[in-house]
Length: 400
Image (cartoon, rainbow, N blue to C red; front, top):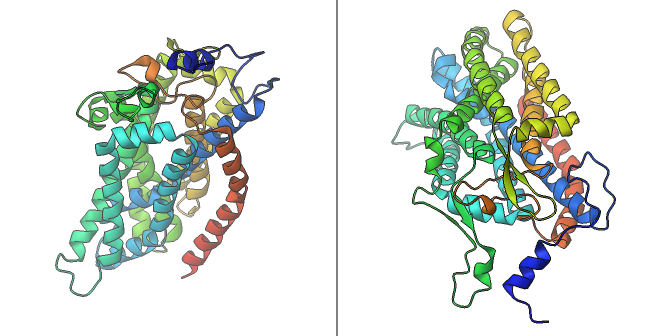
């Protein structure tokens, strides 16, 4: 039989047999369970890397307060030396996050990183600025002076978390792109299957107020984690006393922006995908419904919020307590992980298109082949060893 785009479309949209739910929290009995499990599994891994990246941005959070937490050059040097031991882990996590997205969900990678490139390039530039600052601030022949590089660290500390938060917010608010997979089948047509629908190439995300609120929540979260890290890692009473004051000053606005963003996400119309046809449609309270349908995620979210608040509040009211970074850090990872899983699981479009609803990306229509996901899943078994390596390196760095 002659294969045409129409016959391909008919096959791709054929009803699936014995379909119950795409939630990984539901037992599904069907033949293509393995492929679906791999899709869910890799969305979990990508979400976990995203959550770890948010935690590792305590480096940016501390850098944004570099001049506020230090009273002189010596104290500033203590803070820079402390964060300078960890910045490479943050950058590595960012690169791994992008690489995992490329390997498991290549259509998202080409659509977002290739379409919204101005937003992602600015984010990447701020991280490169950070790397240059750490490496060259004390080099001989530094014409700009150490203070200039210190301000570069502050710029990275402000723009990095803010813009990354705005980019992640588009998982819920949507982005202005169009996907046409049949371009590669049309003779003489462009082989590019996705493109941005306007000339802003991602900068339009900054014009969405809800994106900015989400970005500000991530920004203040990074600051709080940075303060808690400095309290734990820098043994200087003057710095720790300033950290406690700054912790209160950043904790309050974080709560405001986080609660506003969370309530908006739970109450907004979400982007759902029909499991049988793949058609995208708006569903009232979609993300709230996801937490109800996948109630363990709601438990994870509440546990994360509780741990985060415990670490912050105990640090504020107990001057002798310096380990708040661990409960708050773990709590932040759990909160971000639950939100990202809510954005992609249970027949949800994790990257909605505001230009063309049917161009929205789901973990089913944007993932790699079953063979690719299967091979990568075997490779992913080394992740626990990588995490163990990070823990060992972390401890050795702290002993220097």
